[in-house]
Amino acid sequence: MVKDLFIVLLFISFGAFAQTPNIGFEDGTFNHWDCYIGKIDSVSGYIELNSSIPVPDRHTMIGKAFKRVVDPYGNFPVRCPNGSQFSVRLGNYEAGAQAERLSYTLVVPNKKSYSIVFNYAVVLEDPGHPVQEQPKFTAQIYDVTDDEYITCPYFDFAASSTLPGFKLSATRGYKGDAIYYKDWSTATINLRRYLGKKIQIMFTTNDCARVVHFGYAYLDVMESDGNSITGNSYCQGQRSATLYAPNGFSSYEWYTLEVKT
Image 1 (tube, one colour):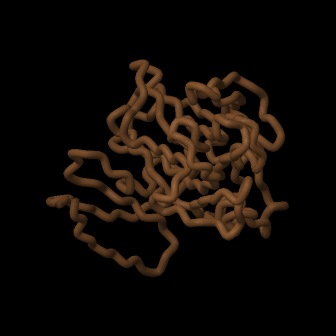
Image 2 (cartoon, rainbow, N blue to C red):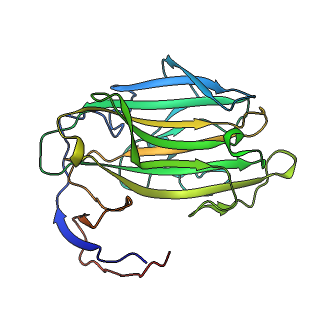
């Protein structure tokens, strides 16, 4: 049972943060982002990536023209419904053991608390392969200063019928295989322990290692001052969290839930 988790709810305004230009793709380009393409190895499941210019249909900018377009498998809007002008699709509906990545490098500002908030939606075909061969979406942080990956939070979704928050698509994939999707969701990466350090935010998608099943994701990073909604990723041993709620709402409702483990 999780006990003694204290939550503080604060209200702030959002504003563009000059130290993270185009982190939310609001230029309508991939400026300040690094793009990669590659493949997943059919034997080891290892993903090999190489730096690249944005590749059409693998790094896809989604703007106003997609306002009423929905994903063919999840029937959710392909452009994030958070009010931003641009989102991105990483990967595509085609298979071929392809892999793609987007990364953004920044120095975490020296302020009391700093977080990155991103929105994501995921579509994964489930062929039932071993987990290292499955279509997958990952979001992770690399600490460039200390040359190590941040282990929490770390988002790793490999195609499965048991993924939390995923639903079964009404449309079937290759040879009738199931396709699971997750509608737009919000996640927070709390970086207050990394103030002053250089980090890389990395989003990666890959197809299955056996060539015939796909995986892709939609992304939109909030262009805020770093004091956005925090605390919705919970790491083991954490005793407290602070939530910063967006302004512009007439009221807020708070619910408590006892979690048993």
